[in-house]
Image 1 (cartoon, rainbow, N blue to C red):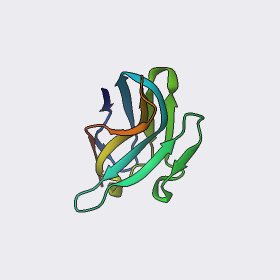
Image 2: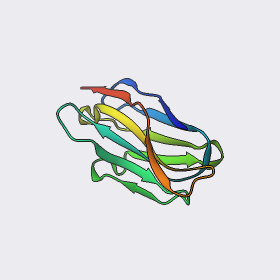
Image 3: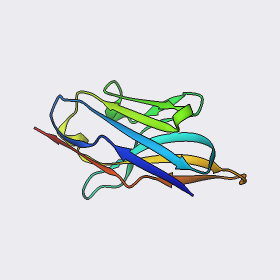
Image 4: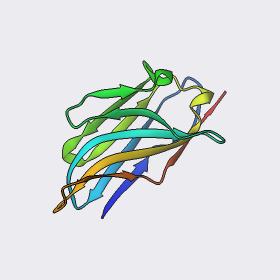
Length: 121
């Protein structure tokens, strides 16, 4: 099986920074895309940022210039550096990974349990 474990959420004042981490473990052969999604109360889950195994990135317009996604392929870990945080960034942040397990041929989506980010005004 595959597990994604997130860390780094918390409470921060507007204008502050947080760094989220997500480590994937288990019988992993390869991870294609890794990303971060978020879900605020009463809203749908939305993509925040994603990064391919080759390092190509994609960001939601609302976080461009403030958030940076990166990954360490050797550690199967993805990071999200969040700067200039705003109250509207408050949400549960979920890690997502497109994983091919050992002895399998398909890539399957896995999700972390979520970590709360709260930005106070």
